[in-house]
Image (cartoon, rainbow, N blue to C red; front, side, top):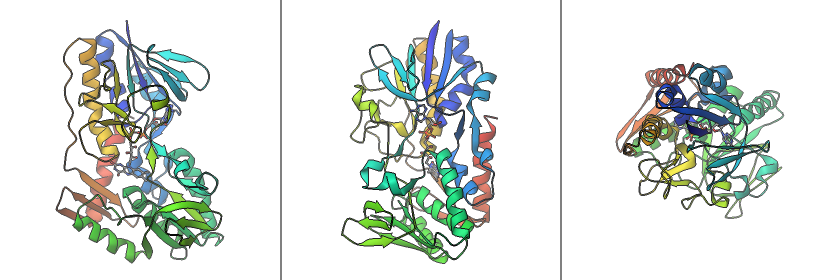
Length: 363
Ligand SMILES: Cc1cc2nc3c(=O)[nH]c(=O)nc-3n(C[C@H](O)[C@H](O)[C@H](O)COP(=O)(O)OP(=O)(O)OC[C@H]3O[C@@H](n4cnc5c(N)ncnc54)[C@H](O)[C@@H]3O)c2cc1C
């Protein structure tokens, strides 16, 4: 019997688990290892932060999903990988090997990139830990103990996080969104213009600058300026686990697992990577859940193809993809490709339908 080992319960792997019957029918025993029984679907996080959804609504129960599809689930943290033995080293001292191994471990903010961040900043990932910290922060804002916050990183996560804070904590706290570039700089000009207006309407100051240090007093910028703040939240700066490179796995410049367009690691036929922890060499696309979601079905088919000794299919990142940002007030801001930009209540309803539809597949 062939062993298929899935490391990390990310957006691609939940889809492989849901399709595991096909792998079992081809003679494979499938195991999923993830560090927590519940994995969050980040698209719903802004709704949770704004207080309109329960945290449970965005969680996929990996143990239950695995049980339904005949997959063994191991709740453990992966801390290393023995490439020759194709075996993961777990934090509890165990090792677990696979004939085919896939990585979908996501990425977490690299706190070492900003001095003092580990001591003074709240990273948005891992999401489960952030939810507790966020609840305490909102409470302190409501009591007037925290009167200002800086959100570092003005990508989709930063914009949604700042809007959710405004929705939750009211008009009083001073909120700043800090980024070296403009908010949503990777999206089209129409979306950027709408985002600038949406932030201004919410009295969220979009400030240009690179954070180099976080202290108890706020953020220090590369040009020496400082922003005083009672709380600092960190988005962006995500990087994959450092042990990928340490353990001799092929990595790109930013430390992601380097894959071919078949999602197989460069130089390996039996190792695969998807989502934020990997990158297809030669293709340009950002780290976003939408790509992990799109890679899931291809990964499932390519694992099956490998078991059946068939040629794998190729994955290509779509150049235009739909972006929908929850603005925390019942509306969403959206866009696609180089031109399309829109916002409104209907956009939030569309986002809810897509997000709820995804999570419902794994319930
Ligand atoms: C506020 C916010 C909003 C966002 N909104 C969007 C959006 O609307 N659209 C979009 O496309 N993207 C969005 N993103 C980005 C999105 O979260 C990520 O791109 C996406 O989660 C990546 O999916 P993944 O499968 O790579 O990994 P993840 O979803 O991060 O899953 C990784 C899994 O592996 C587990 N794991 C991690 N490390 C280990 C380990 N060492 N051992 C065992 N298990 C481990 C984790 O617990 C988790 O279950 C948002 C991000 C944030 C923070």
